[in-house]
Image (tube, rainbow, N blue to C red; front, side, top):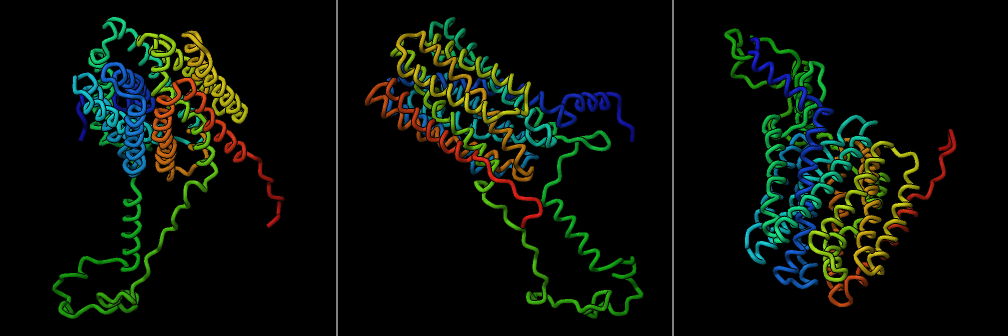
Amino acid sequence: MSRSPTAAGRSSLATWWWGTSAGAVPFLLAVTLLGRAAQNMGQTTYPLLARDRLHVANDTLGVLTALAGLAGVATSAFLTARIPSRRALWAITAGQAVTLASFVLLALPTGLPGLWLAAAALGIGGGLVFPATMTAIGSGPQGQRARSLAVYALSLSAGLVVGPLAEAAVLHLLHERLRDAFAALLPLPLLATLLVASAARRHGGGLPGPAADGGSPLRPTPFHNDAHKLHNASEEALGPRSPSSFGSAESTEADTPLTTLPGGQPLPAPHDRSSRRPRPHRRPHPPLWRHPAFRLALLTLLTYQAPFAALVTFGGLLGRHVDGVSAAGVEVGFGAFFTVSFLIRALVAAHSPLRHPRLVLTGSLAATVLGLLLLAGGPGSLSFFAALAVLGAPHGVTFPLASATLAEGTDPGLLARANARMMATANLVTILVPLACGALASAFGYRVMFLTVETPVLATALGLALERRPRPAAEPGSA
């Protein structure tokens, strides 16, 4: 049956827009930019709303942020890790919709209950979107994963630049009315949700891949492959069947039970478990922490996780209440932070895979230590903006390095689980750090709190140095 011209045109457009895994990447990057811009605006602004409008104490704010981190970790570890790659688009859609719901809660005068629900929704949205998108983009050919994920990290940074700068302009126009700013910026998460939902509906939630006929079939699941193997094995055991073998008039033994197979072998009696063949047991995968690529990627990500968690929750409050920066000025500072991150990620994407990742990571650690010192010891708004700019460099380096290390060194069958577990483990820091930072800020102030954050940075740097110690190569022919 020939297709109509309209259907053929739609098929061609879909093939051009979303027909291959390479064509899917630009679409996912656009959704990522919008979604990350929205989520970052929520993360950096709800602490200001909680402290300045609802008068939430620093230690309570730490508990609130820890709740958001716990929601993200639980979602990533127990839900996203179990969603197969063929349903990645639906996972991204659900995460964007939850982020949209958090914006609605923050825009409405819902008080403290709405604030707690919105913080939890931001965590759940991130726990769904980021691992699912990493899996979708990182499932390409082996030699292209590092570059694809570097471009994905670049798109994240672009969203992080757009979000704070757009919010700074909106806050300035709205005379720093925080709830009205969330209402004005609702189109960003709404558009991200609608875009990915339309793609998920068009393709059944699956990601297309290259096919011989130019189509984009969904990838078969392991159960689907096993079912075909089981069916083929049963056909070989029973041999060819003729149409007259069953139910024919010539069969005079229709009421006689069959006791042998076509090769003369006896047929096992029903319910005789002792005569059944044992089912082949699949060898379980070793724990992820035994994979060198997983350990390296996780430690790389952890070098910056504690400073970033502290900065997102309490960085704006330090600028607002210690350095005298306005709410719009705080967002400009975060815009500078993410602009530097964007530029660094652009360099990483252009030179990916990096030739000297260890040297780049060492520079990232040095910039992290310096930025925290500027926040802790530099008085005035100038040091605040300088610290954020310096801290943007390690933010731009660590995520693409970690995701590329994991994608290039992990079996494709383990990649979805490894991505989700890495993000969940790293996000455990977003539970512990805000709790500790809230207590430290209440007891000693924001500057001492940021100085204390140097401790986990140095600890993870030591662990990374020990992990990257070179191992002796095996001699040729040695056992």
